[in-house]
Image 1 (cartoon, rainbow, N blue to C red):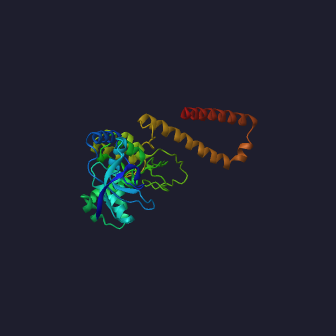
Image 2 (cartoon, rainbow, N blue to C red; image 1 turned 135 degrees about the vertical axis):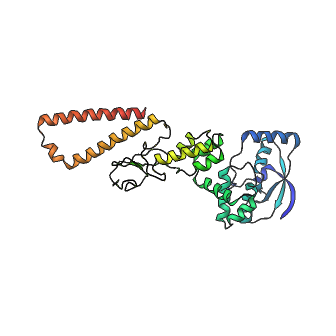
Image 3 (cartoon, rainbow, N blue to C red; image 1 turned 60 degrees about the vertical axis):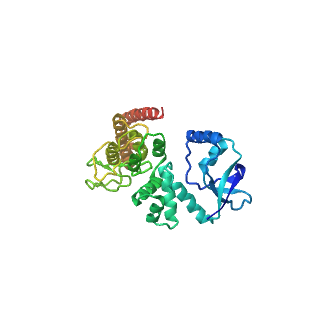
Length: 320
């Protein structure tokens, strides 16, 4: 319950380190500061006595206004003082932020997730925030699965919230799918047998093929949600994580996502796989190689030089 309203010097205000809202638009802060220079500080923030720091006050609500007040060079602000323990203060902060319209989707999800972890039911969280349970669970998913690339694309205005929800269904890590040597279907990372033809994949070369969520964030910038959904299906197939095993190019690259680049990468991977198999054969047949005639050894040596030259050029090209 509120105890009193008083004016508190800005120097005595302490922001909460676990404040869920971390993104503050610089332009909007400057505009708010300009308003404060002309009309003064509007409304009162909410504070409690700062634990372990006598004379200081912990901000519970009003972090954005305090930041603007600092920019406007105000010396003090009006504050409503409340008496709350640590758990009550944390729930107050979360619920105060969750009712704001300019809260970022994943920040909102983090707040929802913390309330649920604190024992508040999804239905109760949804009711207090004025949202549906589906909205709450969707935002929690964004908070727990959405990677840096997708967040940056959203902040830059390149992704709508519907697209963000779809992109969050993709794994946010580099994957190494493998192509079945028998039926050429792409299988997900870690697959031991082809899900299409059941061929053994234990010895198949697996090469990292990029982060599917990062690729999705790049490919889907500015696209309508329906188009994004189609793109998600294609990316899932490419990484072997779609509903069905599909014959497709193996993997995307985070920076190169053209069909030509994918084809080149796939060809290099096939050649590397052939070298790997040849290496295994050499180990098993070392004695036979040692018994070759001098002319045969010179021919093999020359062929090895050609192969070494080829892979030297490949290394130079990818390092350029």
